[in-house]
Amino acid sequence: MKKIVLTLLALLTISLSACSQKKTDTKMEQKVLVAYFSATGTTKAAARQLAEVAGADLYEIKPEQPYTDADLDWNDKQSRSSVEMQDKHSRPAITGKLQNMHEYNVVYVGFPIWWYTAPTIINTFLETYDFKGKTVIPFATSGGSSIKKACADLEAAYPEINWKEGKLLNHTSKGDLLKWVERNR
Image (cartoon, helix red, strand yellow):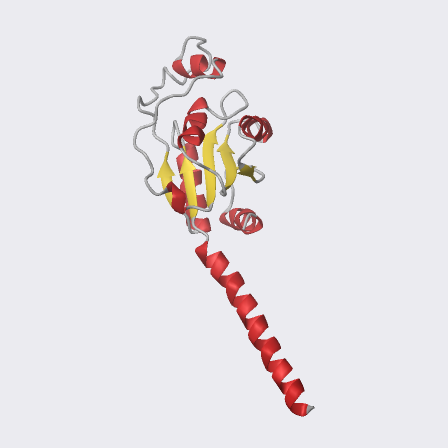
């Protein structure tokens, strides 16, 4: 009887050890990317800090034609950004292509809030790659708007993507970033 109990305990210990090892391996296999578009450098700074905290690779979504100050003048209805944001089918071209997108399990996508939502170049990025099986988490910077409408717009436009709750990263401390990243793991 004693041998049976010891054998069962040994098997239980091995099973628990294997389960715990599998959990660790799954976390280790998770590869994270922080992809961002930044017109003025504000979102770039937030993306760098997020990548550092998350232990993620960093990728800049670069427009083929860089935005000038005149392009970003939201008071001018004829400025490039105003025209793009009025056209829901606008897809500004992006330079370069991330060759190893298939390797990432989690992709944080960052952008400045334009007209209460994501700039249309984010649509270009999302339509360039296959996000099947990936978790996508938006983050943004803004002078006064929240990220809620941008998140709702992205989820409505791309319902096949596994979205997690986005966050506005205006002057976010490393401690708060770490808490947010841990909640998303």
